[in-house]
Amino acid sequence: MSDSELDESYPGVGRLRFFLGKIGVVAGNAVAVIYFGPGSSVTKVLMLLLSIASFKLDVMRLRNIGVSQWFAFCRLIPYVNLVYTIGLLSAQGGWIENRRLDRNGKTIAAFLIAMVALMFFMLYFGPKPSIPFIP
Image (tube, rainbow, N blue to C red; front, side):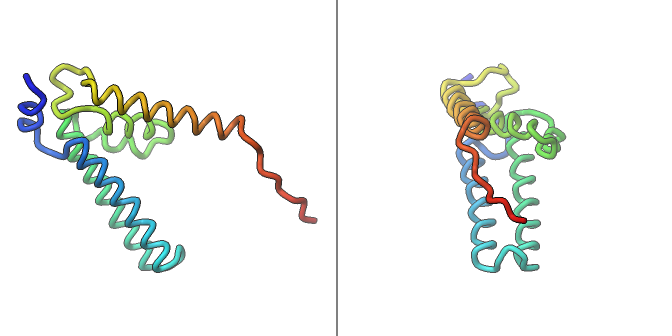
């Protein structure tokens, strides 16, 4: 079955729209903090609304790949949410049919895993910030 047939038979959000939606949520959070300030009640309400929108986006993506929507709660578990997000970004529509990533999915997953490995490498082996002693 071709990818276009699988994408059309599963409702929800595809890879590109999911990625762009997540970028929109991050941009919305950044704009709210810059425009209203980090402690503002408007910022807190906007961040709550954007978090709900992000959760809904995850549910729609899970529907598109054919997995139970209950997996959306995996985003609340530390470190599991990293694997969960990589999976949502790399799986093609209808992934449940053959449980294998297509070529684009493998490329996306390899890139994201390399970025996460680089992040952890820099975190643990990079230069340590010097904190001046304050009496």
